[in-house]
Length: 132
Image (cartoon, rainbow, N blue to C red; front, side, top):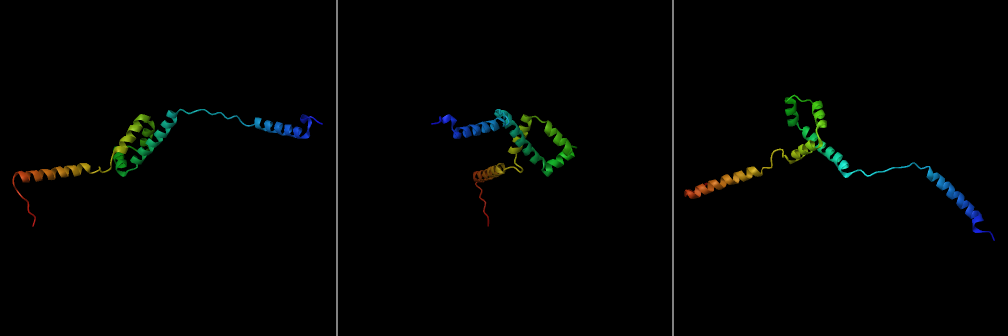
């Protein structure tokens, strides 16, 4: 009886293993490293802030005011690219917090205060208002 190492099955298996291992050794070497979170987040945050500022600069009123001050589109984009990350972020947050026409809450509260004052003055002076 032949030993198991000298059988044809083992020879074919050995040749297949040698061929596969030889092909695997030619695979390119890949290197990977971890990117610090602060670096990846900073670039994403700057891109988001730049989008917010660019959208604000597309409004007609802002473009007109900057044109009246003598700024061209090229000058504005050059100055924006030179702005630091922290300044750009603070500008974008301030632009986000602005409402175009205000929210109207202050107007409503002021109107209510005036109406209450008129009612109190009329009650104190014992006057009545009759609408016919």
